[in-house]
Length: 279
Ligand SMILES: Nc1ncnc2c1ncn2[C@@H]1O[C@H](COP(=O)(O)OP(=O)(O)OP(=O)(O)O)[C@@H](O)[C@H]1O
Ligand SMILES: [Mg+2]
Image (cartoon, rainbow, N blue to C red; front, side, top):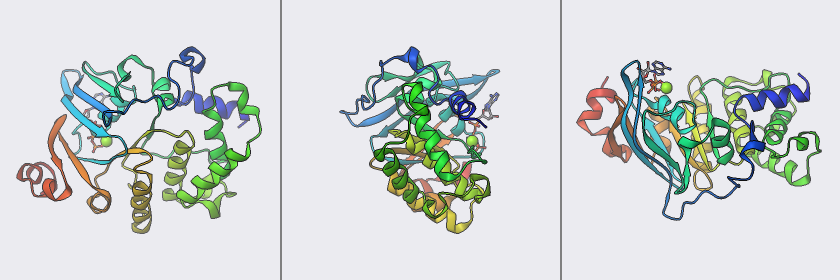
């Protein structure tokens, strides 16, 4: 794939498309979290042919928080991420990123650029390129000025790549083809690529699905390391993983919040046991 094709592939995927139209309306670092929360969902309803995948969902995530979202298949977890990232428009309700950014008025690309990064379940990395090149491409895809995609990396850029290579345990594989990595390593690579764009909020949908036990433990460590500097929302069914990282857990059921609290509180909630954990 040529450099141009790669840039447009990244762009088509929701990277930096339409930035010139967005202009400087949403400058980096402008997410207003002075009152605490980085994300507010209020009364979100999404219907598919009359079926309510989300039904009056309200949720608040604090800045720097690591939140786990659990719940049975079909509870609406992925749909919630689709709404936050602009992939699905809610029938009603509001989504705010910080106090002042009304996500419902923005395109997917604008939302990504405002600082919400999302990892889908299936890793999407450039298999024919090295790990380092994948990071480089992810970084360039984020540059506001398209011409920068041809510019050389600055020393700060290479430092940043080195930092993220360490964080996602891929330093020893920096010059391997991404296609040769294990499934778990590809997942880390994709998280690393998201980090190159310095998101304030990261959404991870089932990040440890298909990982070995060791990879799962390392991913838990990674999530813990990311929290604080980033706000992280993780959807997972793997309860060992969730209990390793959980501070606050939200249980979704039939499109709204069934329970919320510490792992201990939700695990012992009879309604949660009935619809999910007891199965
Ligand atoms: N594009 C769509 N068209 C029609 N129905 C949909 C669509 N997307 C999701 N749904 C339905 O909405 C409900 C919620 O789906 P969603 O994928 O959000 O669940 P989930 O909590 O992520 O489940 P899982 O744990 O299996 O990933 C499901 O019943 C699903 O079939
Ligand atoms: Mg899902």
